[in-house]
Structure formats: structure tokens, C-alpha cells
Length: 341
Image 1 (spheres, helix red, strand yellow):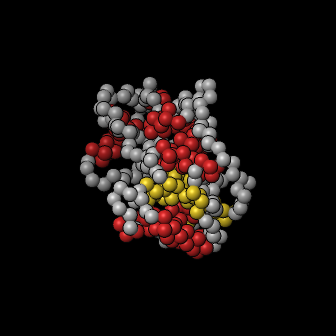
Image 2: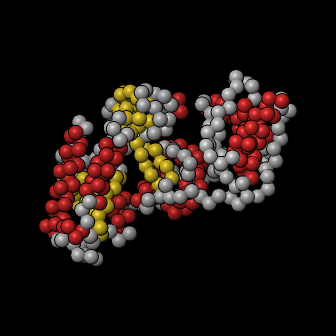
Image 3: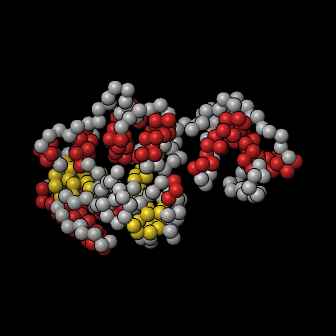
């Protein structure tokens, strides 16, 4: 699948202006019409996601620092046509200049989006038989995405494992709706930090970022080699994160059953120390050190049991995919009947 590119989009409602980044301008035109935005303009040149983020940041800073009264807009009213032109010209100049700074041709023009722009009413994702789409996907994404940073393909697989059937197109339309609503954040998997250095937003790698051209990319891009075994991430790969608030914690209930194998004296002592640490307020980092095969996994199960009983969520992370299946079997054995993904 080719890495998508993104168009900077500016929306106006009276004296209020917003900037967004979208892969399909037709979708934002529909969203704007539904949510009361009067006019929408898109830059006629798309950009890779890592650069689109920087452009969105620059344009957003201008709009935040340019309240309507500075451009002659009265409360509840829009700008005069001349004032709109001045602001759009300024935004376009900054956009093109920022793109050039990063070695990308950015010259272009703002195009107002209307139904006539596309010559037809853009299709909305329609649920086929047995498929979920649109608002019906929202609660599932709300439940499954918090605490994770996933590509759309990974999220589609997570939804499938949860029994939710959808298509890539329907999922991407829904994610874009949630982004525009401020509930989901989309970031370049390999993006720029505050010092304009590329780093991986999945594993945090800053050194092993190399320029190459994967088969799915039309041009060279930056790839993280540190977590490549988990799936190739590039500066054009979107990662999705939930930002609309965590799902409500489950009320504290019954303590889940825990069936542990016989522990050694040292394992029992380590398990007790971990529980004591968890119950203390303050620092939240603890290292359990032991050689491979010493039984580290079992000593954390008691604190997991206590955490689940308090209605909290638990993440177990392992370094390699092949270990996940074995860990899942151990969780099933030690926590009979416990639902987990």
C-alpha cells in the first residue's frame, strides 16, 4: 500500500479559522458542511505526512496569533473578501517557504472546496452486509485504541480480532472523522522532534533512522530499523493515537482468580517486593532483573491480579512477536477465564 500524502486545509466560520491536514479534501468538504464551517480551502499540492505536520503547526500558529478583530471581522460575522485574501496569501507564503526550507517544492495555490470543485457529491463509506462503518465504528475505536499507537492496518486487525468487520476505506474515513472531531491524533511514525531531528514515534529510536525506498513507497523515505521486525514504519506512515479521554475505568470488582505454579523462595520474595512497591505512592518504575528462564513473568502476576481487581488496565510488552503467543498461553493458564487481547 502506498504511503498517503496530505493536503493542508483551512476552514473558516465567521471570524474563526482552523487548519487541518487531510489525505482526501472531499472528506473535509463534507465534514465542514455538516459542522457549520462556512468556507474551506485546500492547498493544491499534497505533502508527505512528516512535512505536513510541520506545515500544520506553522499555519496553526499564524491563525492562533491572528484573532478576527485584527483583520476587521466583527463578532459573529466573517471577514471581508479582501481580508480573507490577505490572510490566505500570508498562509500560502509561509507554507511554501516552510516546504522549501525542508527541501520540498511547496509553491501552489489555495482552492476553495465546494461540491462543484469535485463535480459530484463524494461517496461516504457505506456499510456492506456484515460490515461496520461510520458512527458504528466509533465506540469500538474508543475501546480499543487508547493506550496504543497503531497504523490503520494494525487497527483493522485489532478490530477484526474483536469481531468488528470493516474495510480499509471505511476505517480511514472514520479515523479522519475522529481526527477532525479532536478525538484521534494522527502522527508520522518517523517524525521531527522540536530540534528538527527525525525519530521513531513507536520505539523512540533516534540513531537507526535510515533513508531508503521500500517497495510500497514512490520515493525515498526515512525508515526506523530499530523496530522494523514489528512492521516497517516510515516518515509517511500514519500512526493513530486516542486523545479523546480514556475509557471509563471498570469499577473495582471481584479479584480475578490466579493459579500460579509452585514458586521458589526467591520468586515469592520478588513477588512480595513488587506488590509492596505497587502499593507505595511515589516513583512508578521498578526493575526486576534475572537471567533468562528464571521465572520473572510469574512474579509479576500477583501485582497484575491486584491491578485488575482495582478496575485498572494492564499492558504486558515483550521484545519479539514469537514470544507473544507463549505469553498469551501462560496468561490463560494463570488467569483462567480472564478476557484479554
